[in-house]
Image (cartoon, rainbow, N blue to C red):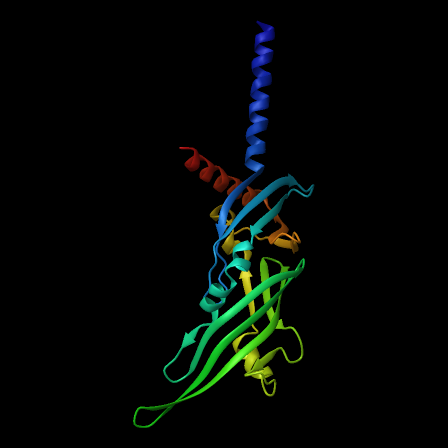
Length: 243
């Protein structure tokens, strides 16, 4: 009888330990949908977390986020068109003609873009004047991370990165307004809802070259109250998923 009781107690200990581990570590697949201008690609992703006590009465949650960006490279023309195409009656007309992107380092992509542009000038008596141009630009997309933010910086690849109808004169200021922009994404907006309100500090961001898979590593330090709320959200989602 004593042996049976001991075995039952041991099983309960293992069950309790397993439950604690399930609450403080795990992974989840989801789809990230970052907004870059008017474009919003759907990127298969997976987040993995591991929690531990940091010795100061607080909890350290380490996060690794993997994002498959292959669809961005594959569909760069359509995404560029969604982000840049516009047509205003008395303003700008822009239509992307071609685009390409390829990895050149762990944090940068080469980005080539060609588009048709026209400045529409409205005049009295319903008259309008179009000032058209064919534009091609060579750009670099540089990724960086700080705090909870990921920065996508689209910049010229040289001092004269764009050509208008084959000529370079007077293009720099035009291209900087239309193409070269900086987009800042909040990482907490991309993660599953269980991570809402988690203050993440990004440590690194890099592509797994030559793969277009992006790896982001960060951490969050939580009080007992914050950690309890975090694990409660994890458990709530787990229970609803397992029903």
